[in-house]
Structure formats: C-alpha cells, structure tokens
Image (tube, rainbow, N blue to C red; front, side, top):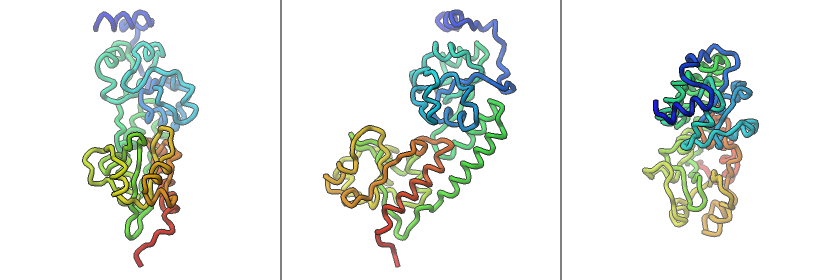
Length: 284
C-alpha cells in the first residue's frame, strides 16, 4: 500500500487492520456507493435508494438520486469522498474499480461489485449482480423480468414496409449521430427502422449538415442533451423531415444509457416514430 493510501485510511478512521472484510451481502442495510448512473438507477429501482450514501455527479435518475452526496464523476472519482462515505459496497465499472481505488477498498474490507453497462444486453446481468450483492435477489429477478419483457416487445415495434429511415442525433454542435454499432443504434435496429448512419464505422460519428441532408431521413430523433433547437437548425438547412415536423424529442433519459427503464423508453420512442410518420406512404 502506498503512503498516500495509508494516510487516507488513517485520516478517515478506517485502517485496514481495524475493519474485517464486509459481509454486506447478508446485511439488511448496507451502505452503498454507486460510481455508475446505470447502477444508481438499478439500486433505486430495487428499493435500495435509502442505502445509497454516495454517487457520481451524473447519477440523476430517478429524481431522488440527485440528493445523494456526490463522490466525483465517472473517471474522476474522489477517493477521499468514497472512503468518507464509509461504504460496505461500492458498485462501479471494472476499469474504475482498478488501481488506487480498488486497493483502498480492498484494504478497508469494502466489497466491490464490478458491472458493465455498454449495451442493452448488459442490463439484465447487471441487475442480477447488484441485486445479489445487496441481498435483494428476488426483487432483482422481478426487475430483470420486466426489463426483458419490454426489450422483447421492442422487436419490430416500428417496422413498416418500406422501413422508416431514421436519423438519431445525440449532439447538436457539432452534429453527432448514432450509428448502427452504437448502443442507441442497436435499439433502432431492434424496433425495425433503418438507421441512415448504418454505414459508419464509429459508434457516434460527427456529421456535417450536408451529410444529414443527403441521408434523407423520414424521421429525426433528437437525443442531444445540450440546449438548442435541432428541428429549426435542420429545417433551415433544408432537411425535409425537419421542415415537415417529423422530429421526435427524446424526453426520457432512460433511453440514453442502458438501464432498467431502457426497454420502456425505447417502446415509447418507437410509438412516437410511428406517430409522426403515420402520413408517409407504405407499400401496398
């Protein structure tokens, strides 16, 4: 252990010699620090919100999570803040739980729960891992089953003949779009629409307005988080879908990151895509 790590443990009153490995999985009220917004959402969905004593600045869903003390960001976690929360369990990505943080948690007997949330298929195992770690296995199975039902219902939910061409924008300035290889691109494929950025290699490439115009989407999905009027921008550029009002704004942030609400949010988006494209011709 480094001198800095040892100093932190001593200052925070949790020297490694004084705290045995945590039995938090058997504890009714474990103290939990979440280093991922996805994990925070799952913890609250499992009824463990009151046990969350630390979270990142990006943990904003559900609204109750905003009141949890912050321990930094996702890549700039504050070691001092995490240890000051005196957690029994820390949930985070494998990459974040390596290095200094992992060493400190090991030394203080804190259980680490590494979870990955990169695709829609990662959510179920993530729910189960977290549920098992905090002693809420039954609730986790129920939540996983609900998520699985929604994700299965998404298959072909917006399918038409010919398929609707959709442009999903995740950044306005510059214009950043979701390609087929991205998590959001996968959701579009599941619902049965044609992603106009499918030929892109990068998951989230930057496009010019000219590229957006050439792609000629039937529907534009505005998933950008920064302020601005994407519909007006693209309408002024001459994009027909924007001029004709076929723009859907993502209002449920559960769509933008894999989590227990992703399936339901994707179903709602598919419904909106179908609604704004209802007047477009289909094959006889």
